[in-house]
Image (tube, rainbow, N blue to C red; front, side, top):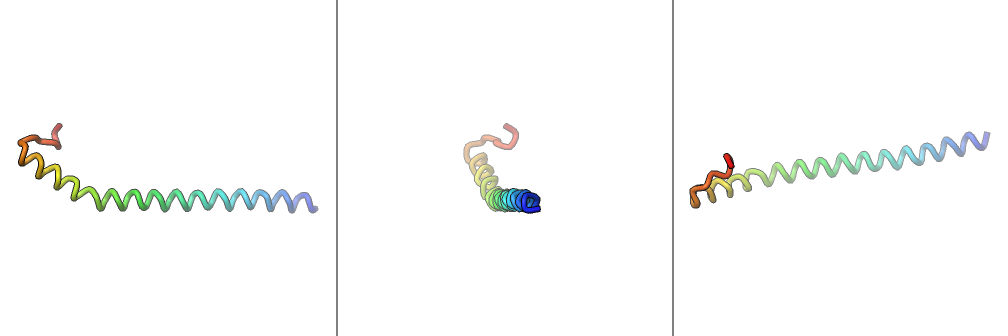
Length: 61
């Protein structure tokens, strides 16, 4: 019976480690989405201003 308990505890340890990485991955994806959302309006505004000055259309390039 002790061997079965050891097997279960090692499996639970692996499962908890896996859950940790899943949570970490979700958090990193959340941050990536939030930073890209925050950056995109300023980025596109800069492209529009540059295209007006240089006469180059970056959107259709």
